Structure formats: C-alpha cells, structure tokens
Length: 333
Ligand code: GRF
Image: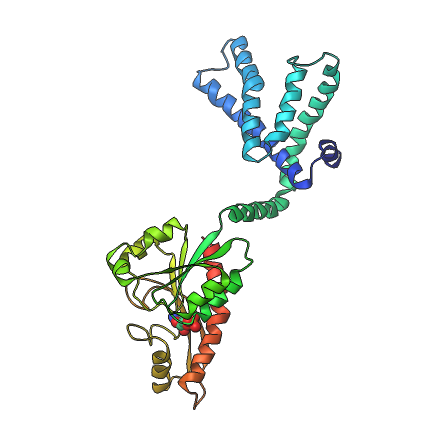
C-alpha cells in the first residue's frame, strides 16, 4: 500500500518518509491546536453545538492547511504540499472545472488515508529516521563547515598532517595558518597548500584582542596549536572558550611549562631516566601546558635511546593521534 502510494506520488524513499512525517505532525498539531483554542474560548460540553462545529470546521479548513504548509516548509517539502493544497482548493471549487471534482475527491481520499498510514509508517521507519537524520546533519554541516586555524611557529609537520587529514573532510576545513615567525616552514606549507595565512606580531597579540577579531571575521571555530611557542593571551581564550587545544611532546604534567619545548623536553626526559614518554593533547588555559587533558599516548624509552631518537618516536605519536583527536572533539561540538 505504502509502496503504491510512493509510486503514485513519484517520490524517492527519503522524500516519501518526510511527507509521511509532515502528514503525521500536521494531524497531531491541528488536533492539539483545536483543543487549545476551544479551551481558550471557554468551550465546555454544554457549549452550543453550532459554535463548536464552526470552530472545528474553521480549524480544518484553514488551520490545517496553514499548519500543513508550515510543517512542509520546515521539512523541505513545500513544493510537494503546495501542489497538494492546490488540488484541495480545486476540490473545494476554487479555481477549477467541476468535472475534476470526482477525481480529486478520490485523490484526497487516498491522501487522507495516507495520513493515518503515515502515522504507523513513522514508527516502522524509525530506524530509517536515524540514518536520515545523520544524513541531514551532515548536509547541514556541509553548509556550515567547522573552520580550524592552526597556530604554528616551526617546521609544521603536525600542521601538514592536519591539513592532509582534513583535506577532503565533509565538515571540517583547515582554513588558516597562523604564525609569529615570517620565516617559519609552516608558512611555506600554507603557500603550497593554498591555505590562507596570518603573520601575527607580539604587540597586537598581547596588548590587543589576541587577533580574536580577525579570527572571528574568518569564521574560525577552533584554534589548534601545533608548535606555537607564545603563551595564549586571556583575551583570545575568552573569545574561544573551550575551543583552543595544544599538543605537547611529553606526558604532562611532567616536562611542561615555560622553556619546555622541542629538544629541551626530550633531553630532560632522557636525563631523568624515564622508561616512557609520549604526547599530551590538552585544552589551553592562561598557563603554559596547563589546561585540562584530552588525550595521552605513550612510547617506551629503551636504555641508550638518544633525545633525537625519542623525538622521532614522539613525533610519530603526534602525527598518528593529533588529527583524529581533533576530529572527535570538533564533531562533538
Ligand atoms: C611538536 O613536537 C609539538 O608537540 C610541539 O611543537 C612541535 C611542533 O612540531 N607543541 P612541528 O613543527 O609540527 O613539526
């Protein structure tokens, strides 16, 4: 029965499901609104039948149509229901030949029956709704992608991995590279990848708004630090609450803080005779390497490992884990 109706309407499965939803929601909403209106007008069982009948008829003739078109619009099905309404109006004798009436009558009858079928179909199609909803969600996200700004001052190997990972991503874009060093390797990556870049200066970063205005103007949603050595000012943290993260090449809270970057970290770890090191991805707060941890991964340190060898092991962890951790965080926005 439903299959025949779908063929008659000449719509695909997704549209058919949405149409049934529109019918079901409209029916429920009209009944509810009629109750609200009669209650508001003080109707009781003793109210003169004609008044009750007139209000109900008014709701059916006008209210139902308005609600139907509104719900249809919200579900992206306005065109289909507008045709439906035109047929309904013709049936009511507005704008068409009388000979069409009997045909239209049966069409309307079918469609009215579909409304009740629709209600039961809604429950049987609930599982389909899950995937429809996620499709719609990703379509919406496509229209409004999440824009990342990667802050880096070094060679930018992590920035490159992030760019590669999100290159064809449906909802997340590497939109901007920010650096405080005009000669940083990461800016060459930005040029090659045709990604916009912004070179910032100390005065504006620390005394101004931390470039929050420029970042907002570019519709940046998340700030990803990947080898950015300046402390992030409070103004920027407040402009992007919970949306700035950093990666540190050690297992924080050890071997973090001012001056703990690059080879200094690995030298300190080896000098302390640690048996393992790793990476920490964390939210950024007003202190160096201090915000709440999001993710850690470890690697073993063998006796005799040099700081250079440890740096390679840690870098491999960074490249493997930073992009997917970012994706997970960002998609749970
Ligand atoms: C990485 O080790 C990262 O943990 C730290 O800075 C380094 C950046 O390296 N925050 P690269 O420029 O991405 O190669």
